[in-house]
Amino acid sequence: MTLDGHGAFPNYPGSDRRPNQVSALFRHMWFDRFDDVTTVVMGRRSFLGHQQTWSEKARAPGEPKWLLEYRRYLDRVDKVCLSRRLRSTDWENSRILKGDLSRILAKLRREKGGNILLEGGPAVVRECLQRDLADDYWFFVMPVVYGKGPRYWGPMKSQCTLNLVETVPGEDKEILLHYEAVR
Image (cartoon, rainbow, N blue to C red):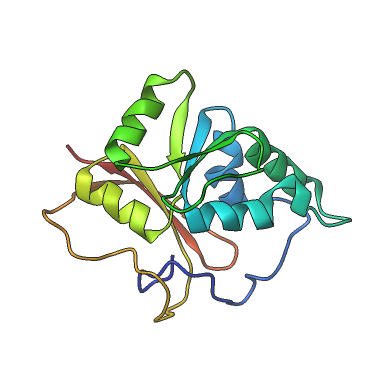
């Protein structure tokens, strides 16, 4: 997200660089959780964007090895696309679910596996906050005030209090903020 709470991908110094080695921030956000996250839930736009950009089919010749590892993880992990409009997908280990988010998450929790990661967009994150559906939140904040794109923050029915677990700075001035829900 941008500093002003938009779900967009603006350019900023270093954002277009693909390093040969995985950054410490990216490693912490993703690689360190490969073993305990067995299901990734995404909104439709996020799902389609990830499939187009990050599946192994999107691989470019000469890419660094770490990027291939990430692509392979996304291909093998169970993926759930939240969509009322999408009817089918050809991304392996994927399914499309529609309906009430709390019921979908309850169903996924009953299935065998590890942790569920919601890699949604602003609407999914906002609904999780409003309905107290997640145990913790990982916000990747880019050093940009952008002013456009879908917004993460909107009207809330009640206050949602979070406890800061960690702050991890990135190489290009991004910040990872990890919070746990206070219940």
